Image (cartoon, rainbow, N blue to C red; front, side, top):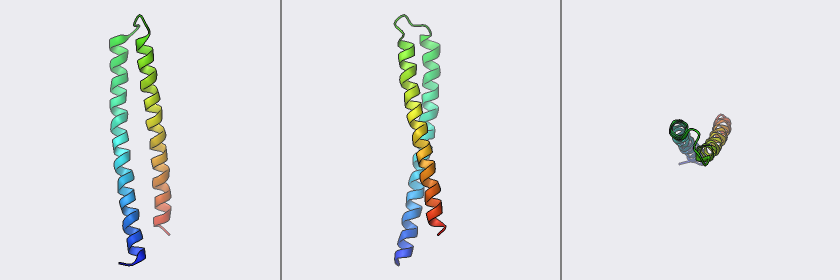
Length: 85
């Protein structure tokens, strides 16, 4: 195979990996939202503020996942630019 063909195959493989990772992050975000709702319902107003601590941790996880989502989208955009050259 030529170098160009190898490069095209590698770009496509990276794109698939990025899309798979984006799908996993979407799944984690959905689960995280459900967990946050369960904490709100089950521990509302707990005596030792455990609900607030748990919600804070879950919110931090969500923020990290959303940041990863944005970075994956940026990588996909850059990959599309490279593949169109």
